[in-house]
Image (tube, rainbow, N blue to C red; front, side, top):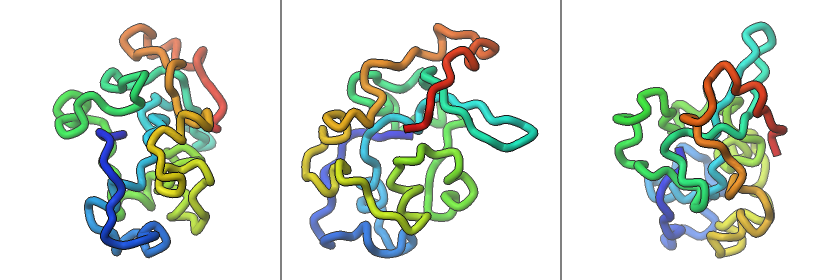
Amino acid sequence: MTHPRRPAPQSRPAFWTRPLSTLNAEEWEALCDGCGKCCLNKLEDADTGEVFFTRVACRLLDDQTCRCSQYENRKTFVPECVVLTPGTLKDIAYWMPSTCAYRLLAEGKPLPDWHPLLTGDPDSVHAAGMSVRGWTVPEFEVPEEDWEDHIIEDQ
């Protein structure tokens, strides 16, 4: 789900305080903090609906940049990859990490202090220890039946 680094739009100051449905494509993409957590494989309890994050990452995630290595073509390689839009957000926000700007804003919460839109520094997510940099395991190294051995707490 994460995409190549894009500069924050300069056209509308504090655009993230506006309703998500009013954001243009550039503003929408700029909401991503670049943490890479959305690219972690998750397990969902069929009985409770509870979502568990694992440290097993999508095969397209670059563990150092925390960005998708094939963002523009990701659905070709990973057909089940979620395309997050204002229209799909309400149905899948529970699947997003608790620190995700899209989820936070949809829930009426503010961006965290370390968010790059607030700091002006795209690396602030990493400096704050809020990204997956350096601690994921590629999905091709872990059989799916063993993913539960890699469950982590949602940060």
